[in-house]
Length: 387
Image 1 (cartoon, rainbow, N blue to C red):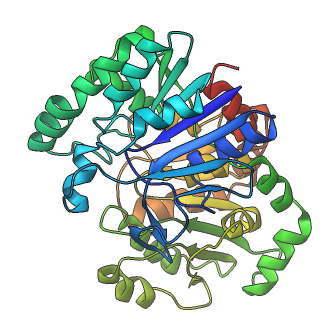
Image 2 (cartoon, rainbow, N blue to C red):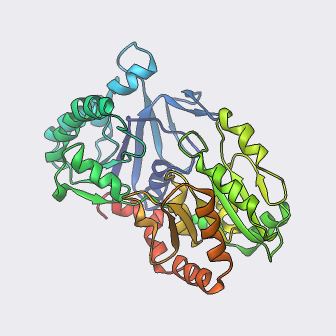
């Protein structure tokens, strides 16, 4: 098939392990002709801004990446809410897709895609949604202006023409229904996951051994790993550090990877003793897969991140903060959920798992069971477009 992905609600950055990067990789590997239309904004050395790459190129996976400029001569923070671009319709006519996959609905050019579909009725359209109340529409004003007034009509205009609206978590399926008003019959769950090739490489026992040796972790040590963007919405990482620091068991150790907001960095580093608790910086490329593979238990005490699904795919037990609509990562007992933010609860949960080997073995058996295959991006890439 000719598959066109449209990432105009946000940007696309080459080399990341985000959903849009990995889905197009596996669709191209399956032999489809894949293109991706996106904005001319991306991350350059960790900073969000205008891309320094070509506006039309073939990426290393054989996918054509096309970057469109905004139609209005306005600052980015206005344009990203307007979401109208130069040349969207013309480009669709040029590419002549069999299938269109739309990433998120927060842009007005969704109506342009509807116009194209009305002219080309044979084209199938799939839409996904990455918004829920943990990351979007968190106050009355944005919920009832941007989401219900400005973007909901775009989603409703697409509703009759799309095959399905995917929510990437149960909470995001609910968001489609309750905020955008999409019917239950048109919504379904399409989980995020992990790159199959990266999972396979990280599963080599040499990877686990090398990471643990690098950071002075003995094989008898019980290694905890946490990671992701640590910001004002994920200050619970500090609670995890305190909990590990208070546990007297010298074999419980914690590695933290990811970016840290400047206002939290001093506090986070002060809680690192470089023995039990260590911050190891940003994870480049596949490094996150290696860190997870080295862990006995991965702990996410704060808001959801894409690493949750990656850990499920890698078959490692987890402790996660409980959020309504995010329990899809529990595939039969691989996860313990934290119901409140407290050092005492984190410490109690860690010790329950550490001091009861039978409990840990049950979690490990569940984590490595068949349920993890649902989080394979090779499978997800096919499901996303109805295959």
